[in-house]
Image (cartoon, rainbow, N blue to C red; front, side, top):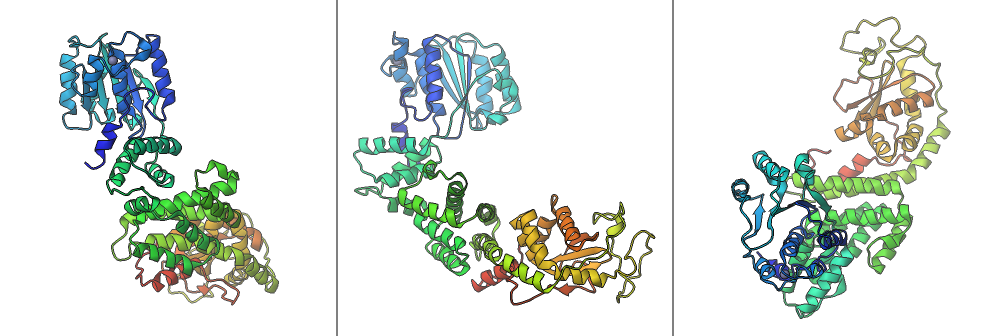
Length: 556
Ligand SMILES: [Zn+2]
């Protein structure tokens, strides 16, 4: 496998060489110095953080022939050398993820009583121990309950939660952390130097970032990149091989979100796609970048971010231009796009990214104009105020019988009018038409209040309502898309929306959310459309993607 050679060559052989896990190595060295050896260790942490390397170092240290305990492992004695060369019979390494795992555990049970061949202790290293079957775990547990004095177990796992508690509780546990970028860069730098090569610091930073805390991944990548034989390994080579997008370019894309420039943003996304960037990688970079902007905006401590100075300056400027609300929406949308990419049918593979981008841009767009539109609406239409209805316990909740459609007699309707209990229905002198007029007149004011009360996502969803209607005492909001309807109905959102309408209209109302065409709505009226009203999210979204030649069959 490419990239394995350098990793093996640079595998740490002493406690000091293990990078980024000082909290583990220090504790183990102190225990060895004081002769406090445990019979079972559990090493946990993500891949490539040094678990199995340290397991071997520990196996050497407890068997090393050097008379000075502080100098173990010496890496020179017969035992140390044999372990390094993989021919020490008393170090038994089991890969629990392999098919032979069960057989090897059975074998272990049979042979565990035998004395070590030449070392002081038999050391069993079981890698990916969470992969053992229940049967194998039971066998292991019996051994751990009464461990022979000459045996040490080192269990390693990336998923400690999948190791039974009965096993975990019998081990001394060490959690390996992701190795910080700076420490990986330092180590890579030493490797490059020793190999007689040269690399630009920013190239090593890019490799380290991509490796997300795994030294094994970082060194394997470095090995692969060095094989191109560049005189100096540069950032362009790393970006090219990894399909990384230049951070400045991501910065330009975020600028288009800040400037609500949908056309420029879509053009940039499509340019990157044409250049052949890997789409998942692109989304990951956008998400990481937006997180950085949010971080600077909220914490106002850019030094905490691990970014080059030129990028940091752009991020700081953008943090002033973008509100946390817009950033959170953008992050949410791009994270959703990440999983949508996997399900995306071929044709326009970048569609989820474009949709995420447009959803991120459009709230910023409409937010800026919403206040103006709302005041205009209030100026022309005084809020309709009606007498409050008598309180009725059945009046709330769309699922209650009271919320069933109650077509009023004055309306043309093909449905027979259902029998109504005396306490329900439209009181005399307050026809449904009044409620509809009031709801239409108060719509922009309602939207503005909904933004403050329920957040921008719910506001954006409400803004996408196609038609409103009144049935009985219920205001029916008809959505074009299920995702928008679900957003308004989920959690406490509908109750909030209802409360807002009640405050606005000074009367008891119910809210029902449907899809356009889902229920017969004889009096459905298009929303107020004036020149001041901004285009809603869905229209703009559809227009945007259709301009790109996409055929949209389903949204949300
Ligand atoms: Zn030794």
